[in-house]
Length: 335
Image (cartoon, rainbow, N blue to C red; front, side):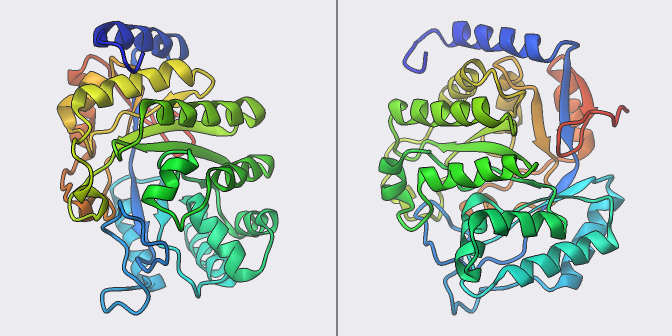
């Protein structure tokens, strides 16, 4: 299907899967915020323009009061949670993260904390001298509600060795999500494509995500997005960027292949609002967040923004009924 020239045929099949899993012509969205608690990172991934090395004058760790201020702004806009991620800091141990989570939960007990990608969790465990299971259990006890799918890129070590050789392996990423599911934490799965991988690499990624979902049932959503090359070292070596057609076909195939994962998110941030609307007929049933704040992709030159009103209009103009959801895709915020 990924090699097929029948784009519409693949899209129609994905749309049939979407309709089966999500009857009622509903497309969801969320109001939340990305908070990057630090940009200091030791991994030096070639596709990232956001990180700063240890000792950089531009490196930071967000003070707690600044995080509280960002949460207050999110709640004022009707937000229900925050997605908190950062670089892999070599000095921040488990007690920092426990204090961060518990402080937020104490002040905002109903706020959903969707935090820390698999590489971050593994880094916390390593720096703290803890097992992976103990690390996740302690984070959950401190207030962690779910884990985002960041750090997946392409789940194939041939690709990972080339674009992020210091980052976790495929099996390590899977181990974080498997353990999280076993401990009762739901997670999402992502895929960053267009970074020089082959179609076979993409299929291996799909297969590994599907296999873990068969085992645990812990993924709430799959979120594919396009590599953004500006200001990245990897961008200098990528001859052709992924096109809108490539995005639509890849998203459609993910919806067909991953029919054991309930939600597939169509992105407006990287491919744009119009392509996002088309993607809702290619298997997508969600358009993600209004992204009150987004710094990682912005650092690679993407500056699109959306308000709740814009996302609702985007969904409605595509022929669907917009419904607000929470982080776990519970759509009880009907409005």
